[in-house]
Length: 504
Ligand SMILES: Cc1cc2nc3c(=O)[nH]c(=O)nc-3n(C[C@H](O)[C@H](O)[C@H](O)COP(=O)(O)OP(=O)(O)OC[C@H]3O[C@@H](n4cnc5c(N)ncnc54)[C@H](O)[C@@H]3O)c2cc1C
Image (cartoon, rainbow, N blue to C red; front, side):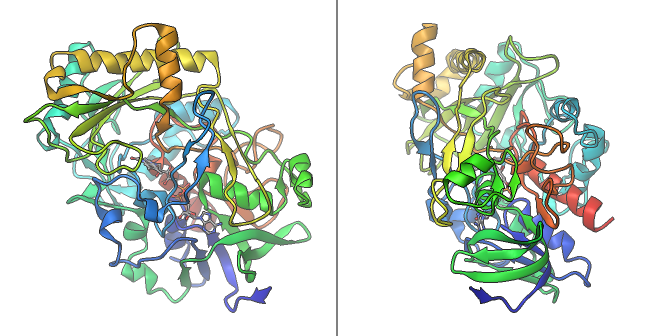
């Protein structure tokens, strides 16, 4: 092992949606030395390649971890996209800027997390955004992250047809999903300005922030594991054997990455670690409660004369299945033009995709080996329960009805993928289970919760139970995946923990 010359007060691993925010906020105190290690390249404030800036290109295989996962019963292997660049998955995502709902946070509270209610988090959602529209009660005007509500005139004819079709089928028109109501159909809010996706490295790690003498950012450094002395973290060792010492370590390597680092460090299910020859330090359920939204795209060719493809996003129908719990909205149907997405057909197309956004099935993230460069074993266990399959079937039928509605049908020239959406429940369920793709919102591999909770890995401030000087702050600490996309909620979590723990 070689030793780093820069001991840090706080060392952050991973510069994604959460890590970039933490680096910026924690280094506001000039007396605190902050070091951030990111496995992917760091392009600085001005050198991001077009593939990452262009909001109409979703995902980029040159900046991806190349992971695959088990999807579900009929999808044994599928891609599991994750950004590998300073900015993380926020640099490759679809740019939908929606918050978790009040009902989502109520569920966290029902399970013992008593200071993450919507009232607790709303000030942080407001403070992180700058948006010119919407009600003041819900919106911030001067935060770092630009959020813009798409207007009807910015949408493509097919997006507009989708909204009209949903209204014709009885759904309410929503003009601001980040306002009081979400139950209905409307255009997305996006963190996109002039066609440029606003990732967290662009927004938070500005030239001014980077000039701080107490902040060091390293790209192209893959962390292997955390080092400990007497139950307290003392730094990390990288895949090439370099040691970085620190008084405190924060893992922000994402839902797959943070879990993998914890497991390699001896924090995880003791039996599982022992079978890999890793000495268990803390017997915690790391990787045992993976949650993500099963996602079934139905891709249609666009009709001649209606081939407009930008913006890629789009419109959303957020609704409840007949089996949703009280106040919950467990289905999304999204209308997106998947320009250049590696998992979608090319050409003039629109995907009307259904997601079950409050799944009950949970999956796992485990290690295949101790090798820090080996991909973890990811099993999403999508649609792993009967109830999940029934609700997904209901959602896909709603999406199919929208495509058949006279308001949308003239924009569509035919179904490309899957080949058909049959009427029978059994046949359609089989098609759904074999057509699953990714919505990209994995969470909960190191959930927040009280020390006596059987699923909790960290406390309500991200501190790993039973270990000193080690936190996890990213999407992996979300206790239950919210019914929304996850980027803004992850940024909010980082902002809130930075404020409550470090900058209070
Ligand atoms: C294709 C796609 C589309 C999406 N679309 C949307 C959307 O439209 N709206 C939305 O809200 N959400 C969307 N999401 C989800 C959202 O982007 C994520 O929930 C969010 O970015 C997660 O943030 P994070 O900080 O947990 O992880 P990440 O942002 O993934 O950050 C983790 C960082 O850690 C680094 N890292 C990992 N392991 C190591 C290691 N060992 N050493 C050093 N560094 C490491 C990674 O390279 C990465 O930069 C999408 C995701 C994807 C992949």
